Length: 125
Image 1 (cartoon, rainbow, N blue to C red):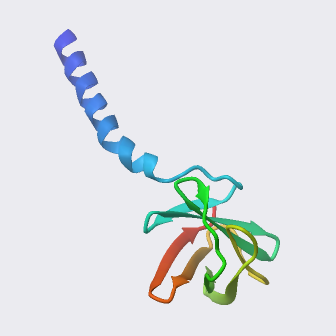
Image 2 (cartoon, helix red, strand yellow; image 1 turned 135 degrees about the vertical axis):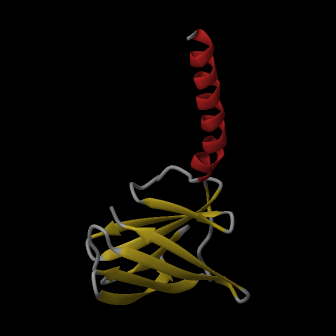
Protein backbone atom coordinates (compact mmCIF):
# COMPACT_ATOMS: atom_id res chain seq x y z
CA UNK A 1 0.00 0.00 0.00
CA UNK A 2 2.78 2.43 0.92
CA UNK A 3 4.50 1.61 -2.39
CA UNK A 4 1.37 2.50 -4.36
CA UNK A 5 1.02 5.80 -2.53
CA UNK A 6 4.69 6.60 -3.19
CA UNK A 7 4.28 5.79 -6.90
CA UNK A 8 1.14 7.92 -7.17
CA UNK A 9 2.82 10.81 -5.34
CA UNK A 10 5.82 10.60 -7.68
CA UNK A 11 3.59 10.53 -10.77
CA UNK A 12 1.63 13.54 -9.50
CA UNK A 13 4.87 15.46 -8.82
CA UNK A 14 6.14 14.75 -12.33
CA UNK A 15 2.83 15.89 -13.81
CA UNK A 16 3.01 19.18 -11.89
CA UNK A 17 6.56 19.83 -13.09
CA UNK A 18 5.50 19.19 -16.69
CA UNK A 19 2.54 21.61 -16.45
CA UNK A 20 4.24 24.39 -14.45
CA UNK A 21 6.25 25.96 -17.32
CA UNK A 22 3.15 26.28 -19.51
CA UNK A 23 1.13 27.91 -16.75
CA UNK A 24 3.98 30.22 -15.75
CA UNK A 25 4.35 31.62 -19.28
CA UNK A 26 1.29 33.92 -19.09
CA UNK A 27 1.96 37.01 -17.00
CA UNK A 28 -0.57 38.09 -14.39
CA UNK A 29 -3.06 40.78 -15.40
CA UNK A 30 -1.99 44.21 -14.14
CA UNK A 31 -5.27 45.95 -15.01
CA UNK A 32 -7.80 43.17 -14.41
CA UNK A 33 -7.96 42.14 -18.07
CA UNK A 34 -7.08 39.07 -20.10
CA UNK A 35 -3.38 38.47 -20.85
CA UNK A 36 -1.96 36.66 -23.87
CA UNK A 37 1.68 36.26 -24.87
CA UNK A 38 2.68 36.49 -28.54
CA UNK A 39 6.21 36.87 -29.90
CA UNK A 40 7.64 37.30 -26.37
CA UNK A 41 5.37 40.28 -25.58
CA UNK A 42 2.37 40.25 -23.26
CA UNK A 43 -0.86 41.90 -24.40
CA UNK A 44 -3.56 42.64 -21.82
CA UNK A 45 -7.06 43.41 -23.08
CA UNK A 46 -9.23 45.54 -20.77
CA UNK A 47 -12.79 46.57 -21.64
CA UNK A 48 -14.01 49.89 -20.21
CA UNK A 49 -17.56 50.50 -21.34
CA UNK A 50 -17.47 50.80 -25.12
CA UNK A 51 -13.68 51.23 -25.20
CA UNK A 52 -11.07 48.52 -25.45
CA UNK A 53 -7.55 49.08 -24.14
CA UNK A 54 -4.61 46.82 -24.98
CA UNK A 55 -1.60 47.18 -22.68
CA UNK A 56 1.74 45.92 -24.04
CA UNK A 57 4.53 44.53 -21.84
CA UNK A 58 7.88 42.84 -22.35
CA UNK A 59 8.45 40.57 -19.33
CA UNK A 60 6.52 42.97 -17.09
CA UNK A 61 8.09 46.17 -18.42
CA UNK A 62 5.94 48.62 -20.43
CA UNK A 63 6.57 48.69 -24.19
CA UNK A 64 6.17 52.03 -25.98
CA UNK A 65 3.25 51.85 -28.41
CA UNK A 66 4.17 55.00 -30.38
CA UNK A 67 4.31 53.87 -34.00
CA UNK A 68 2.09 50.84 -33.40
CA UNK A 69 -1.38 50.59 -34.88
CA UNK A 70 -3.88 47.93 -35.76
CA UNK A 71 -7.41 46.66 -35.78
CA UNK A 72 -9.63 45.05 -33.17
CA UNK A 73 -12.25 42.60 -34.41
CA UNK A 74 -14.96 41.52 -31.97
CA UNK A 75 -17.20 38.52 -32.63
CA UNK A 76 -20.31 38.30 -30.43
CA UNK A 77 -22.51 35.44 -31.56
CA UNK A 78 -23.05 36.10 -35.28
CA UNK A 79 -22.25 39.83 -35.08
CA UNK A 80 -18.83 41.14 -36.05
CA UNK A 81 -17.54 44.64 -35.41
CA UNK A 82 -14.19 46.26 -36.17
CA UNK A 83 -12.46 49.19 -34.53
CA UNK A 84 -9.12 50.86 -35.15
CA UNK A 85 -6.43 50.46 -32.50
CA UNK A 86 -4.41 53.64 -31.91
CA UNK A 87 -1.60 54.52 -29.49
CA UNK A 88 -3.02 56.11 -26.33
CA UNK A 89 -0.15 56.53 -23.92
CA UNK A 90 3.09 54.89 -22.84
CA UNK A 91 2.15 51.23 -23.40
CA UNK A 92 -1.51 51.47 -24.42
CA UNK A 93 -3.44 50.96 -27.61
CA UNK A 94 -7.09 51.98 -27.59
CA UNK A 95 -10.16 51.24 -29.71
CA UNK A 96 -13.36 53.29 -29.29
CA UNK A 97 -16.95 52.12 -29.75
CA UNK A 98 -16.41 48.39 -29.27
CA UNK A 99 -19.37 46.08 -28.58
CA UNK A 100 -18.42 43.19 -26.35
CA UNK A 101 -19.86 40.76 -23.85
CA UNK A 102 -19.33 37.50 -22.07
CA UNK A 103 -18.02 34.85 -24.45
CA UNK A 104 -17.06 37.38 -27.13
CA UNK A 105 -14.03 36.53 -29.21
CA UNK A 106 -11.63 39.39 -29.76
CA UNK A 107 -8.82 39.42 -32.31
CA UNK A 108 -6.24 42.20 -32.20
CA UNK A 109 -4.05 42.59 -35.28
CA UNK A 110 -1.18 44.88 -34.29
CA UNK A 111 1.53 46.31 -36.55
CA UNK A 112 4.58 46.74 -34.35
CA UNK A 113 6.72 48.13 -37.20
CA UNK A 114 6.80 48.02 -40.99
CA UNK A 115 7.88 44.36 -41.05
CA UNK A 116 6.21 42.88 -37.94
CA UNK A 117 2.49 42.24 -37.47
CA UNK A 118 1.13 40.10 -34.66
CA UNK A 119 -2.30 38.59 -34.11
CA UNK A 120 -3.51 38.24 -30.52
CA UNK A 121 -6.67 36.28 -29.71
CA UNK A 122 -8.76 36.78 -26.56
CA UNK A 123 -11.99 35.23 -25.27
CA UNK A 124 -14.00 37.42 -22.90
CA UNK A 125 -15.08 35.86 -19.60
